[in-house]
Amino acid sequence: MEIKNQRGQTLVEYILLLAVSASLVVTVYRSSTFQKLFGDNGSVGKLYKLESEWGYRHAFLNGRSSGESPVPYQSAEQHPSYYNQLKSDTHFFGPSDPYQ
Image (cartoon, rainbow, N blue to C red; front, side, top):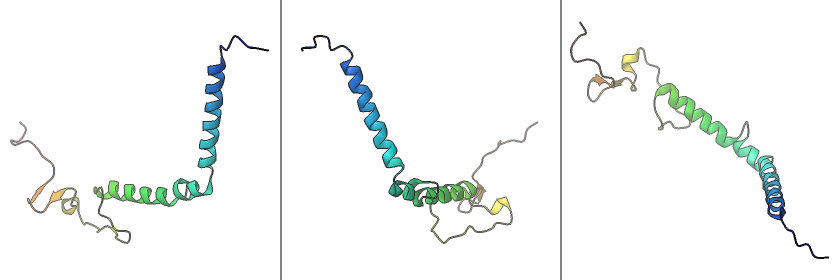
């Protein structure tokens, strides 16, 4: 028997390819190795969470070693993200003349 009409064969092949790809993604996602690295309590996820929280809180993108804790500042004027000690000025700008 010879099938002369092959319309739809490409669609079926793409559906099968999608199903196989999805099953591979789910298999890798559920693997213990992936969960150890990127899961809810994964090592990479924890490290990224700690670094991003520290950077957001202290206005530094990097430079924190694993055991370093932030220095408590008495006021915002002493915080390095606000005050530049080299220039003896803040990192912010304001009007050159007072508002009228």
